[in-house]
Amino acid sequence: MRRDSVVATMALAAGWLAIQPLPTMAQTATDLRNEKIVVDYYEPRDPRFQPLYERLRKRRVLEELSQFLAPVRWPKTLRMIMKECPSSGVSWPQVFYSKIEYSLTICYQWFAALRSLKSPPPAFATQQEVIVGGLVGIVLHQSAVAIFDMLSVPRLGSDDDAADQISAFVGLQFGPEVARAVIKGTYYIWKTYDDLYVDNNYQYDFAARASVPRQRMYNTLCMAYGGAPAIFKSFVDQANLLPAARAETCDEEYRQVQAAFRKTIVPRVDSDKMTTVRSMTWLSPDDLK
Image (cartoon, rainbow, N blue to C red; front, top):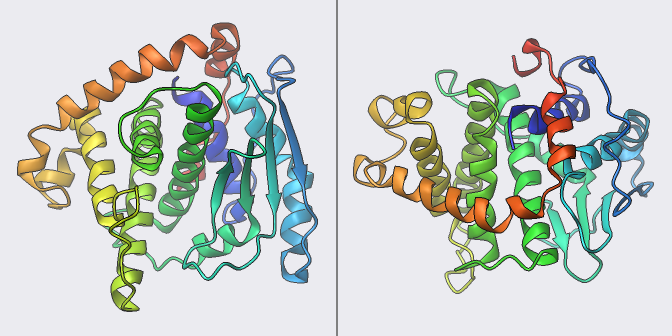
């Protein structure tokens, strides 16, 4: 997988959040339909989400996301859903995959949560980068969970930790600008999540299968530095976001994920459709500014 496939998701994210004017799609691919993917927009009960619902449906966001996922040979029908999710008392509304109904759901509340993030330090990223990159990182994560489930991909450890690795790995395949946005956005989601816990005196569930947010934050940065050290060298040398002791082994961690990805997932991808996805141009240079 390369830049253009995830750039599609970047363009969608920019449109969803209405921060920039909608990017102009340079081309569309009529042969990127996959009969195993269906989409549905649920009309929200809360009137505050009605304009968002109408904009997303008119923008055909899920339809374009389905093009992004079309190269995967899905053995079951993947349902892609946007809806208002019930409040569960958790600090973040969810983007989640359901193994029961083979569905990937994006809650309308998630867009509000992303827009509520406090601004990152200017030297680290722009607000646009962390919002768009964070959204893309979460969608990539849940897509990885769906692939693990439907394709029966073997993995060691929890689904969430493995999906974090795949999300960061895939995010690095699309050129420096997109890679920076995905990694910075994902990192900032986990850092903000961690700060939220500290500020509100929440208790971590150390018995949970997934690593705690700060560990996942460092895992994301390590994958980035291992796969693209020239791009993310400043994270270690200047910003000191990734401890030097951890950075020493990041190239090994990246190669491990790369080998697993090639062995377990690449054979389940339609190469012709992937070639089409790679050939498409989705985003103008100004969309991440």
